[in-house]
Length: 216
Figure (spheres, rainbow, N blue to C red):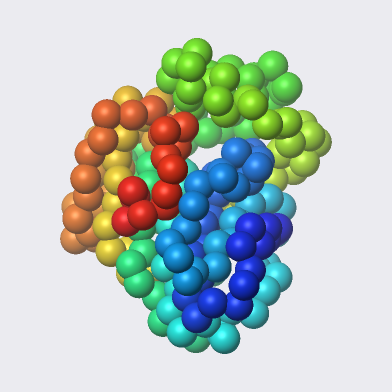
């Protein structure tokens, strides 16, 4: 696991962003936090060992996207920090599931047929349009060997621990999501009594975002 400290002025509040699988945090680094708030991006889930101590922060606001929702749901529940609010975007605590996440056959097919070309196809589905894809690919993609190992490790983690447990405050569900089916997302949040808001966007919907508060 990797942490990029985009803003680290030792403010009393931290905004912690969990990225999705295969994502380069470079694509999100220009989205602004609030004034008086540090900003860290978490990515690269080839292990689920968070490498930092955040106990010094008086409050941690948390946003997780895609598979990052599962990762945060797994590792954050026991952290001795004051969270809030905690926002999930286009992911669920049970990420591989026919009713609450990515259907099992789809996930297994992605894993078994993983190649550089298929990752590009995945990115096209994730972005939903040529315009959004151009934005997403405006930064260098991570090496194939790295993201392949990351997905294999996530698969192992899900097999051993299918679901994470965390007190999410709100979820966003993109109605054009072609990675996590919207109906499965809504079913997952309704089951956990987490309010959600629908948005007309693809799985990756940050191309127009200027400040993280737009999602909070």
